[in-house]
Image (tube, rainbow, N blue to C red; front, side, top):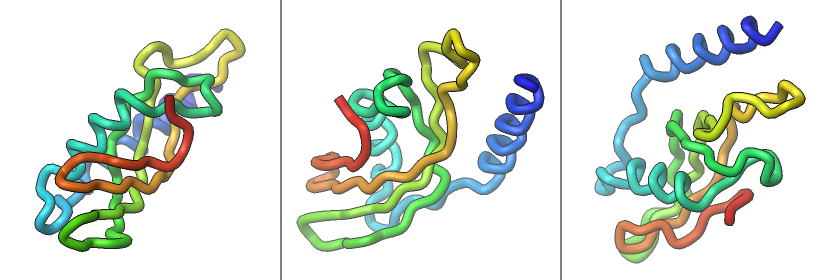
Length: 114
């Protein structure tokens, strides 16, 4: 069963990679900035998965003013430390968060974080 779920995740990632995310208009580095911030500040599964990496799969601009950019971000995440814990529960999945950027830097992120 574990190999089937792994295959499904790999298939989903392959399809995601084919549909590349477009840069945010007038904010070409926003996605890289968000992924980097997430890497150093986020955790998933209520703290069970403490060192996740994300791959942004979709963005939606919520607010875009000269002082602030707010994005709803859908993403695939995978814990860098391990693929599974001792109970066979995987540390990966799809999720969404809202990120707020000011002057090209993330100043707020919803969801679990340290």
